[in-house]
Image (cartoon, rainbow, N blue to C red; front, side, top):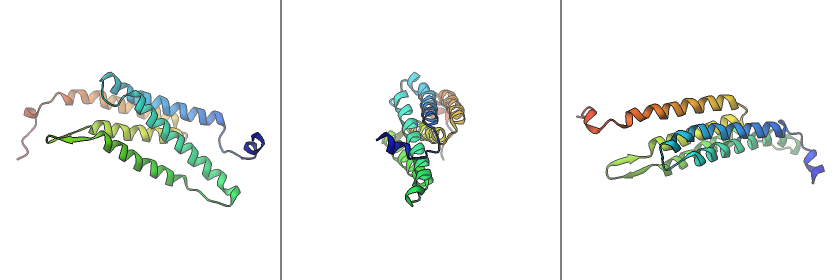
Length: 159
């Protein structure tokens, strides 16, 4: 089995894979930490899993595209990335609750979508970029706390 594995010419080393996945986990944790502190329904574990899963799929897609030539096949990693983004939309839709003339979960849905994007970036080899973007997104979520406390009376009329 090991000989079969050694015949593949992987484009990146297993250490690179590990680092990419680790950056995805860190980025997901940074984004999920704010949600955990605020005791939201979707917390740090979910954000880490979304980023991690996106990174796994990205690394796999990139590696598959590099290795298919030896089999006379072609692969386009951007198609996998498009599928991940579409799947994240469904995940986000599940976080949105509608009822009683209220729509909730929009920030959760949006931040899950961002967590997936962080994983895609980390999986593509842009780990530091992913972590920096996670910090910016967490700061945005933290700053939005001030906006949450505005009541309906503070909003202009829709007339």
